[in-house]
Image (cartoon, rainbow, N blue to C red; front, side):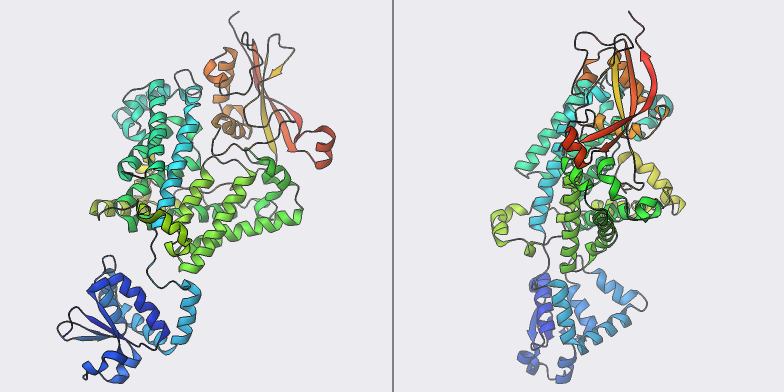
Length: 596
């Protein structure tokens, strides 16, 4: 009897030969393979017609299995495939269904071969992702580098001891309300040494670790743990200024990358599931919001000029014909709602889905500034591209260096991954309602773990803003003559063109966009900014582009609300301005400095 098991197949069947190549790469020398045309004579107990109808698996003890059972038994020697035997033997009805499917394919081999060719292309071996893993790790390092580097020059003015929303004050309030539970509700290394020095240290450490990972790729697990812990620490104390979806996405991606470095296959699939949730949720929230702009496919006639920080390309995109905007909006829905399902499809349609998703991210990045979001999303998308899809020269260039995300099997990582998968269902149940839904135990567990940002809900631009209110902050010495503070990147001077800023994110400029959509009562931090300007706080002034009062701070500060829109081509030729604006009135009461 052959040792190890021998799988005998029809050597004249193109469909059979293709999949035998795939299985042989999986099982290695734990299973032997041979066409019946060569070895049938060694097994006279098996009729020749049986060889023609299905594969035959000869076990070491002489037992003979055929059909789907033979295929599943041969694959059971592969770690990670043993669940197939459990499904076949234990799940009611599974064996009958699998045998029926096998017989159908055996009767239609030519059609099955054509379908296989269409779905998987010419590549017959198992899919590997070493090149994509290498690229993903470097793009993740770049995202961390952009995030920490961008924050380094802003944190003191935003949440420092003399910032707009001091982190010390925030953590003190947490501790006052929750006591020792505050350490769980606000998991941050900042507890260990509160102060501006810690803010600088976290950013410096993050930049250093990101550069190390980008340049060498060595020690990925401890480096990824350090990056995740450092960025979580800043996000927790960042309050409004670090509450964006890409901050949550970076933390979730970073944590799953740690799992991928411990248990690669499982981590890879969890990263795919994250990509699905990110993209599909963005489409669902638009439909579920019942927003008329999305329902009528006219949302993009507003989007380019009303988004937080458009680029100069966004000005040109805004002036495309209305039909182009409607067609683009329809295409957006097709990509966000359709392409995510291809993430779990066979190779060829999965690559088509990846191309569509990358194209969407490139368009978003060209017309608007969304920090490191687009690059991070593309990093996730690249994990859909197997090694055989990359050019040979790239595979040769990377060589063994590509296998950076690797590591031994870990049951602990498996348990954590299963928990994350279950928790991720909570925000999916909430799609369309905005409220957590699902079993009570799931909701409670999700809320309990939410401070750690391990699993998050996603969905951008559920409601399309059709107007662009903009806050202009002004100061005055006498209350009569007012001079505007110019922000670094948000619209102010109508003649200043929109710029490319990403992957840097000017957090104050972004938050001013949100504040303009609310009342001053719902954005009390704007009053804190005004107080800092009244007293000439250097930390706040460094966040701005200009200070019209360099010698001494003004006695009065006010925030005025304007309606901004892109100029028409004719208006721009006449005035040179990229924006046209109209005064709406005060955003908040004028504030005065009481000291003389």
